[in-house]
Image (tube, rainbow, N blue to C red):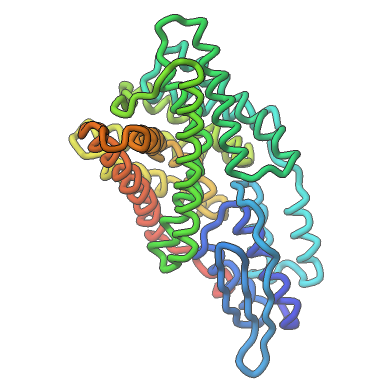
Length: 416
C-alpha cells in the first residue's frame, strides 16, 4: 500500500483505536494493532492510551501529526465488532484494502447490526444466570428464579439505556429490581433460599472483561489504565453488593457472608459451564459460526478448574489453570479463523470470575460498617478473606490467560 499522509494515518489510527477500546480490547493489543496499521500505511506511530482518551502521534521528529481521539464512551464488550475490525486491519496490513476504502469499511463495522437479535441476547443472559446458579449448586427452583432474574436484568438495562443514566445508577437499579423479582419468584417455592439466586443475578452484571483487562494492563506495563479499569470494576461490584443487600432486606431475607457456593459433579459442571459460556457469547455478540469455540473454552476453563480443585489445588491456582486451558483452545481457534484469541477466550473465562466472593465481601463490609466496634471477629475474618480471595483469583485468571496467549505472540502482519 502506498504511503498515506500523516493526517490521514493519524485519523485512521485514532479511529481504529477508539473502536478497539470501546468494544473490549486491552491497552497492549490496541497499541500493537495501531502500530501495525501505521507501519503498513508508511509511517511510524506512538500511541498513548489513558482512561479518558487516546493520543496518537504519527511521523518522526522532523515531521509529525498528533491526533487526540474523541473521549472514550462507556466501554462495552462486542466480540463481533472486534472480529469484523480485525478483517479490516488484515486488509490494511496485507495491502489488499485500498486507502480510500478504509473509512467506508470502518463505517460498515461501526454501523453493522448486531449478529444476534435483542431477544436472543436476552435469552443468552437468562441462560447464563440460570447456568451460574446451577454451577453454584442451586436447586432447580432457584435456577428458575435466576433465569427470570436474567430476563428482567436485560430488560431493565435496555429500558434505562434510553435515558442516559449514570452507569453506577443503572447497575444499582438493575441489580436491585432483578434481585427483588427473583425473590418474589421464589415465594412460590417455600423453603428455597434466595442466596444463590441473588448471587447469580449479580454475577451477570459483574464487568468481568474490564476486570481481566485491567489486570492484563497492569502486568503489561500500563498501570494507569489497569488501575482505572480495576477501580471501575471494584466499584461496580460494591454497588451490586449493596443493591443485593437492599433487595434481600426489603424482602425480609439476608445474605450470609460465610455461606459460599456449592459444587457439582464433573459432568454437570462441564455441561453448565458450556451453557453459561454460550449465553455470554450470545450477549457478547460472538458470530454464530464460532459460538462453538466459546463453548469449548468455557468447558475447558471450568472443567480444568474443577478437576484441579478435586486434586487438591487451591482456588487461585485452579483458576489460573482453567484460564490457561481456555487460552490454549482460543489460540488454536484464532489461528484458524484469523481473529484475536480473546474473542473466544473471554466468554469462556468470565464464569471463573469470583463474583460471589466479591459480593459477600461487599456485604460483609456493609455489616462491619453497621456494627462498628461490636463487629464479631468471625465477620471481620470472613470479610477480609473474601476480599483477598477476590483480588488474587481475578489476578490468577488474567495471568493464566496471559501465559496461554504468550505461547504464540500475535504476529505483525505487515512484516510478512
